[in-house]
Length: 101
Image 1 (cartoon, helix red, strand yellow):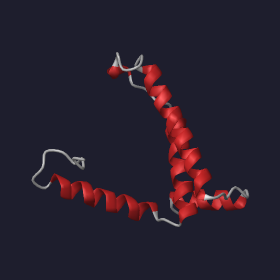
Image 2 (tube, rainbow, N blue to C red; image 1 turned 90 degrees about the vertical axis):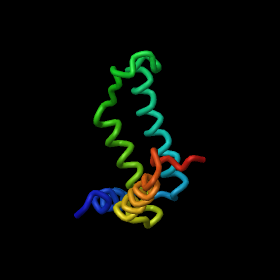
Image 3 (tube, rainbow, N blue to C red; image 1 turned 135 degrees about the vertical axis):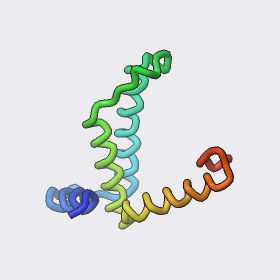
């Protein structure tokens, strides 16, 4: 069983399924907690080398993202592969994988 399947099974077993809009709000909230830890650990950017985020906060964010994928019936591995291919193609002849927009 992969991680997305584990999350989906957990949600189903504990009657925690919910519409994608609520999953997105949860994801934004968890990402906000990561941002807060980074801001505080670096003294709001004045000491970037001190960046520190608790593993459980990143885990909560990953859980929320996989839960969103499950609610949307999106295969997270396929989505990641598509993104990696996109970034790799952007690097062909470019200096950065950014979209340039």
